[in-house]
Image 1 (tube, one colour):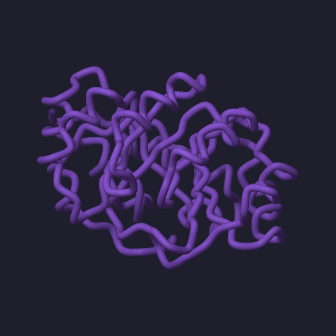
Image 2 (cartoon, rainbow, N blue to C red):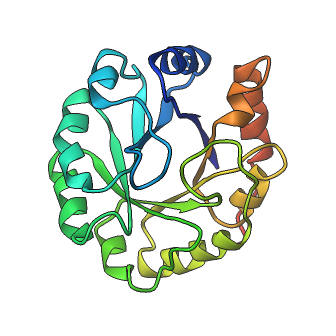
Length: 213
């Protein structure tokens, strides 16, 4: 299982600091929050335009009306754009428009969001993100129950790439890997360590286990 360093910045200072801390990574996961879909609010698009990561970027969009973010992030060079299942009334159309904009499309499931009722959007998705914390803040405790969704997601789209986001650390990354995840997001477990790159390598090593499904 791969590990993607996460970036969750509410100010320009935090963004610059976090970009420096994860500068070693080839690919990063960027959290974008509008302050409405979740209570937290990250730096806005005009700030990201000036300080967009130079690596491959997977954008995790926690925002209402995700369609309006497609063109801006495509222009910035994002490789992947993940929206939340309940953020739009037209998820399939939005996911296809993400693909048409040249990015991989992804759908995220919050802990209390069921797969049932969202089977069709999974067919239009290249990625699925299973949230093992409630979206909006970094550093929360890992919730194991949502991992049960991984098997259901694979049933509806065997080719989809599945990630786990929330509470990933040295004690939980192997749990996500055994559940069948292809990648996990680690933010606090990397950035809060004295040597972020060494912490990243330890997470990768711990995640090198065989999935059970």
